[in-house]
Length: 139
Image (cartoon, rainbow, N blue to C red; front, side):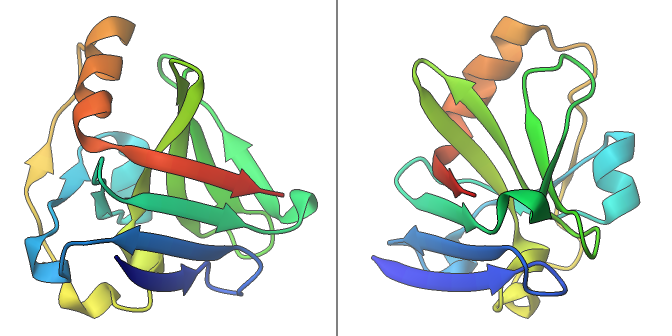
């Protein structure tokens, strides 16, 4: 496993991502929802990897919209979107905004745009189980 690090813009939220894949092997995409588009997010997950988001509780802001099953993690100081977490089957899974990684420039600047409109909760959870990774949020 290789450890990749990152943070929000101001450094209040630290990220540790561990994966056996090289960056060029990682599946990065862009969500077409208004939240992700406004943040310019490029996200990825790898069920065989893991991610940890760490920061003071006052610095990790959580935002929910849509189906209300996902916490979008933003820095309360600088406003950077670092990733999203969802509780599923007794565990926390996540997608990571690769823009928050130190190696962000190694990823495709315009990966495929994915439309998830019309998904119900069951379908969304099923899709995320395939692509999102185990996560920890330490606040």
